[in-house]
Amino acid sequence: MKTNNRLLNLISSITNIAWYLNIIYISFGLIALLVLFVVDDHVTTALATVKFREGPPLAAKTLKHIAPQASSAVIFPKGAGITISLATSPTIVIFFLTVTAIFATLTTGIIKNLRKIFDAIKHNQPFHMSVVKSLKSIALLLACITPLHLLYIYCSYMIYQDTIVDFDKQMKMVWSDNFIGPILGAVIYIIADIFKYGLELKKETEEFV
Amino acid sequence: MAIIVNLNVEMAKNKMSLKELAERLDISMTNLSLLKTGKVKGVRFDTINAICRELNCKPGDILDYRPDE
Image (cartoon, rainbow over all chains, first blue to last red; front, side, top):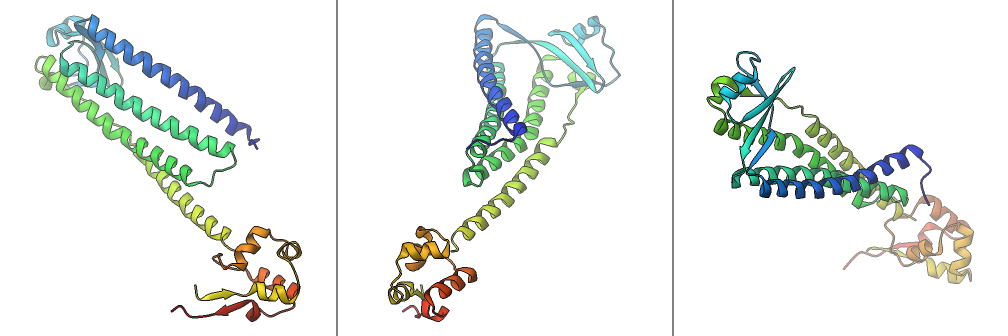
């Protein structure tokens, strides 16, 4: 029996589309990244956002002076993203592949568990231990986003320090991150735990005649 | 389990089959069978009331207590 909730069906369909798009995106992304590393000896990329200690000075000339590898800078209200050209050393390759793999795992994990929950609802079996497990997995993955992002900023900082002349004198990293991931994760974990308690109560009721 | 269900005795006294009693109590044969074999976690007062009504007996006739050895 299928559920008649249109909104639920819509969200479920969007999740399914996101699942397939995510797989395509990850596959092509990883292949493109590997090809780029093999073909080119430099990779041009924007890392984590930085702030200029004396305001945004950046004429291209100044930027070239302080960061010979930097090709451009985009100024945001809270900082700037410097597009930088990095030699494809093993460290850089491992860094980018790890970052891609981690965030691909996070998104894939979240979407996969969402699909499991929607499947359970569609088959009229929302009160199942697998749904609790899926909810807890989503909570854990969401909670991981902020620490991993902070780790990414730290790695970017290390790369900037290596490539930009007097990085610490000229600029500083923007460390701020919103904590929506861990907060959402905590909320979902609590809901999952309440759900588990409800599941146990239901099971107990079913054992009564 | 120290609680013994003597439902089969009362059913035999009333010459009532499991199927017939299940229909009269409006519960599934599976659940009644589980109750008869003492494999349930609990029994509702509603169910005991209906059983006593249909089998013309008292709760003590259906349920007995024998301490575990």
